[in-house]
Length: 287
Image (cartoon, rainbow, N blue to C red; front, side):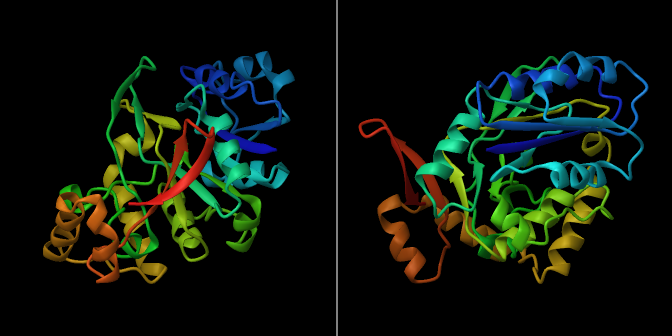
């Protein structure tokens, strides 16, 4: 079973698109939970419209997004977990692909996408640029911090990230509710200490970018919280020259030479899930 939690507060403009993108997946083994923080717009009418498709929902004051998520995950029972904020959306194939990868590749403990989508205010896909692959060594050197520009290998897209319950429980079984912005980044730091992040070679979800969103209006606060979380977990951003050299090696090095570069400790490779159309199965390559 896949458990998805959506936290919400006064997102009546977008939450129906979010809900439909989840319940419209055709995933029979889905547990969908919505935690609303006491909205006073049209949100509750929309949630009630779909309540027969929800495993559980509630509308009451909470301590913010990450407190709401903890409340929802505490009610969940699925083996695979993830969350989708109330202004974001999945692709039509998200849950079927994620479930299949976890089923066929038992070594995968958490999964994201190499192709993060960006939706505009109208819900259209307007950007899809490759990111990653990802690995813990580069993560703790600051390469996935937001705002690193050309020195970054790209953020880990929360909307496209899923994990096994066993990893969640080993990592503490909750998000850090004291954080206001970068609770996802802090969770990734804990996950990286415990397991390898695999990246699917396909888009799995999208972040809606518009002017009034929390992370859109306070990007510096997110960056500050993410950096604090990285330092707290023992990470240390490397300087721009070192980052530029490492990333330049990855970009210009032919794939056939990357294993040698990895053996020489010049680069660190990541695990990528790729689909073989002949066998109809997912496999793993290093890039």
